[in-house]
Length: 196
Image (cartoon, rainbow, N blue to C red; front, side, top):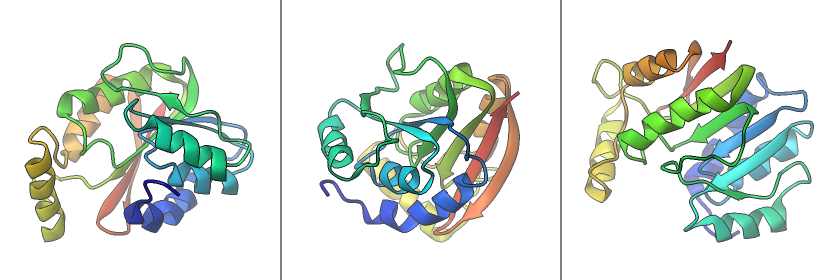
């Protein structure tokens, strides 16, 4: 598999076990920032009734497309190009928007766009699922997350671990209702919101 990520491999099963509680019956899932496609391949294979739409920035879409073609199950749709800064997303209505390790990688303006646009395209009862590390009341949950934040900012000053409260406010302002903040392995969280 090209572009293999050990971190994505480590967290794919805990994420699957969480999504299994939310998805089961033919839902269309739009994944933002699919990377090499490891989560798409693992989760869609296990949840055979759902339909999974992987997306990635145009620069790295070829790697994702090749991996899905080689290893993906039939319920994974053809990978689509998605630049968070773009006006149009490749789906008009979905049941779930899923983004793992995206909010802290992209600039804050793009993180805002992710949440706001997800709220727009989610159907009634739709789920927004965000996975990754977050700060609470401005504080990191662990020393390692603080060090990770420094590493992120060295790579791109506009990136960084976001405040849980910031995400909550954005989601609420976008018409989403908070459902759960679940602790996950390796100092990550799984945030779930519903479009009512």
